Length: 187
Image 1 (cartoon, rainbow, N blue to C red):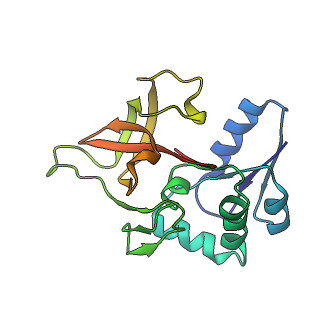
Image 2 (image 1 turned 90 degrees about the horizontal axis):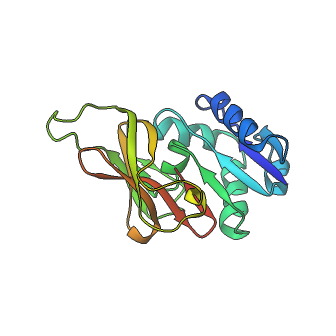
């Protein structure tokens, strides 16, 4: 099985590579690339992201044909794609970090700043927090409800269709921390 981590020159991709290398332990062919042909021929894709919504979208759009190749892979061909952090947030229609920016539009919704309730909650939200699994999910198959996950973010994805939410965390309010829609997964 070929798994591609998309390298679009945005964020700290090395931690994603190290994590997948450790988990896969030689069971998959892991490739890190922005090469369109390799992306199209992959079995699964990981779309990481670190930084602002706008900077990640701009970086993705700066590579000729990359957005179209990802859309063909995930939306047209229905192959599995995992978005991590801003990789998930870019699934949205629009984001409001730095400037109003059009997202990929794969899952209807928006990315907005977390309501810190007039300074009651520190932003960015950094640290371990308990997750609440909302529905049966392939990515949480072997993870217990109420497990702790690590967070570093000031913005949240708010999907229009709440049925895509697979997990939330409580920080000032219930914040979506994972989604699943058909072949699209995000955390």
